Image 1: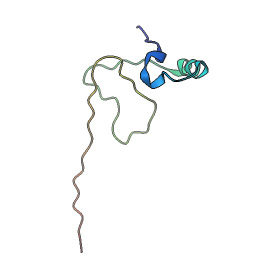
Image 2: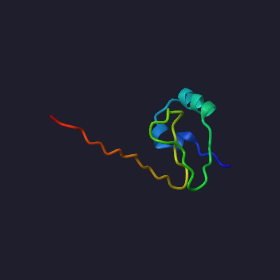
Image 3: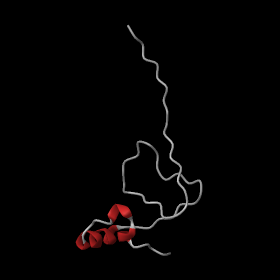
Image 4: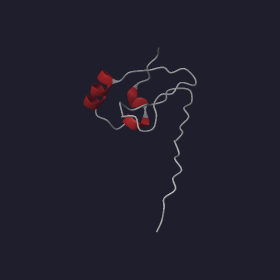
Length: 70
């Protein structure tokens, strides 16, 4: 496992040293196999995901509704 320096990620490049240190203490690297669902629309948020390598598909559930009018 090779962790990339978080300060090299554009999202975090303007953080101070103190902020980067705090982030380093809580960051976790996770691996997901191809085809694995990571989360679904409506799931409670549990963090921020940054894709280090590979691809992620995003889809949205669509519910067709018919509203009765007057």
